[in-house]
Length: 92
Image: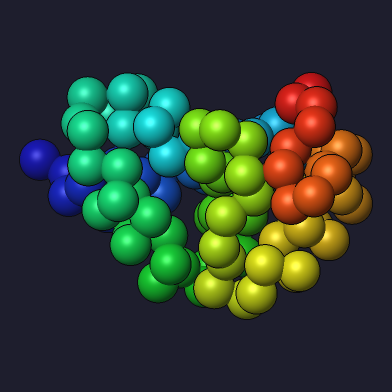
Protein backbone atom coordinates (compact mmCIF):
# COMPACT_ATOMS: atom_id res chain seq x y z
CA UNK A 1 0.00 0.00 0.00
CA UNK A 2 1.24 3.48 -0.86
CA UNK A 3 1.96 5.98 1.84
CA UNK A 4 -0.20 9.09 2.12
CA UNK A 5 2.83 11.12 1.05
CA UNK A 6 3.18 9.21 -2.21
CA UNK A 7 -0.56 9.40 -2.85
CA UNK A 8 -0.60 13.17 -2.28
CA UNK A 9 2.34 13.66 -4.65
CA UNK A 10 0.61 11.59 -7.35
CA UNK A 11 -2.61 13.61 -7.11
CA UNK A 12 -0.77 16.96 -7.08
CA UNK A 13 1.46 15.91 -9.98
CA UNK A 14 -1.73 15.37 -12.02
CA UNK A 15 -3.05 18.93 -11.52
CA UNK A 16 -2.75 20.51 -14.97
CA UNK A 17 -0.97 23.79 -15.61
CA UNK A 18 -3.41 26.68 -15.13
CA UNK A 19 -5.63 24.71 -12.72
CA UNK A 20 -5.76 24.62 -8.94
CA UNK A 21 -7.13 22.21 -6.35
CA UNK A 22 -7.76 22.75 -2.66
CA UNK A 23 -6.23 20.73 0.15
CA UNK A 24 -9.78 19.53 0.83
CA UNK A 25 -10.29 18.40 -2.78
CA UNK A 26 -7.05 16.44 -2.63
CA UNK A 27 -8.22 14.87 0.61
CA UNK A 28 -11.55 13.93 -0.95
CA UNK A 29 -9.79 12.31 -3.91
CA UNK A 30 -7.71 10.28 -1.46
CA UNK A 31 -10.60 9.51 0.87
CA UNK A 32 -9.15 11.35 3.87
CA UNK A 33 -9.96 14.43 5.93
CA UNK A 34 -6.28 14.90 6.80
CA UNK A 35 -6.11 18.25 5.02
CA UNK A 36 -3.53 19.70 7.41
CA UNK A 37 -1.38 16.60 6.95
CA UNK A 38 -1.59 17.15 3.19
CA UNK A 39 -0.33 20.70 3.73
CA UNK A 40 2.52 19.40 5.89
CA UNK A 41 3.49 16.91 3.21
CA UNK A 42 3.53 19.57 0.50
CA UNK A 43 5.48 21.99 2.69
CA UNK A 44 8.41 19.55 2.50
CA UNK A 45 8.27 19.13 -1.27
CA UNK A 46 11.09 20.63 -3.33
CA UNK A 47 10.62 18.42 -6.40
CA UNK A 48 9.80 20.72 -9.34
CA UNK A 49 7.80 17.88 -10.94
CA UNK A 50 5.24 18.10 -8.13
CA UNK A 51 3.49 21.46 -8.63
CA UNK A 52 2.44 22.12 -5.04
CA UNK A 53 1.97 25.81 -5.89
CA UNK A 54 -1.32 24.71 -7.51
CA UNK A 55 -2.79 23.69 -4.15
CA UNK A 56 -4.85 26.36 -2.38
CA UNK A 57 -7.27 26.77 0.51
CA UNK A 58 -10.95 25.87 -0.01
CA UNK A 59 -11.97 29.51 0.38
CA UNK A 60 -9.71 30.53 -2.51
CA UNK A 61 -6.84 31.92 -0.44
CA UNK A 62 -3.51 31.21 -2.06
CA UNK A 63 -1.95 29.96 1.16
CA UNK A 64 1.64 29.33 2.07
CA UNK A 65 4.40 27.93 -0.09
CA UNK A 66 7.82 26.64 0.88
CA UNK A 67 9.47 29.04 -1.57
CA UNK A 68 7.45 32.01 -0.31
CA UNK A 69 3.92 33.22 -0.87
CA UNK A 70 4.96 35.80 -3.47
CA UNK A 71 6.67 33.09 -5.51
CA UNK A 72 3.49 30.99 -5.36
CA UNK A 73 1.44 33.94 -6.58
CA UNK A 74 3.96 34.63 -9.36
CA UNK A 75 3.83 31.02 -10.56
CA UNK A 76 0.03 30.90 -10.50
CA UNK A 77 -0.25 34.18 -12.42
CA UNK A 78 2.30 32.89 -14.93
CA UNK A 79 -0.09 29.98 -15.53
CA UNK A 80 -3.02 32.35 -16.12
CA UNK A 81 -4.67 32.20 -12.69
CA UNK A 82 -6.25 35.52 -11.70
CA UNK A 83 -5.42 36.53 -8.13
CA UNK A 84 -6.66 39.54 -6.16
CA UNK A 85 -5.73 40.23 -2.54
CA UNK A 86 -3.99 36.86 -2.27
CA UNK A 87 -7.17 35.04 -3.31
CA UNK A 88 -7.93 33.11 -6.47
CA UNK A 89 -10.39 35.22 -8.39
CA UNK A 90 -10.94 32.80 -11.21
CA UNK A 91 -10.20 29.11 -11.60
CA UNK A 92 -9.69 27.96 -15.15
